[in-house]
Image (cartoon, rainbow, N blue to C red; front, top):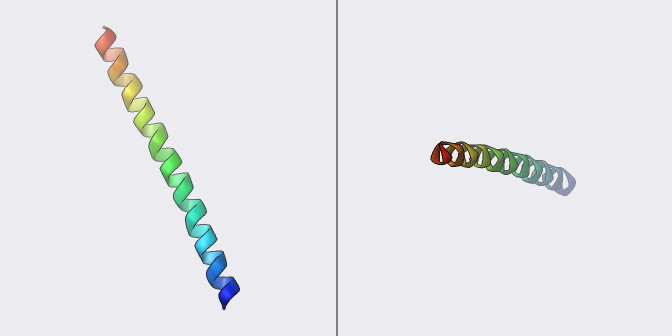
Length: 40
């Protein structure tokens, strides 16, 4: 039972990291778009 719980926690942490990484990329792209619009 303990091993199963540990496995589930690890999967959730890894999935969370991927989600945060994707969110960071989206924010970066939005910032680049605003920067490009400001330069025009």
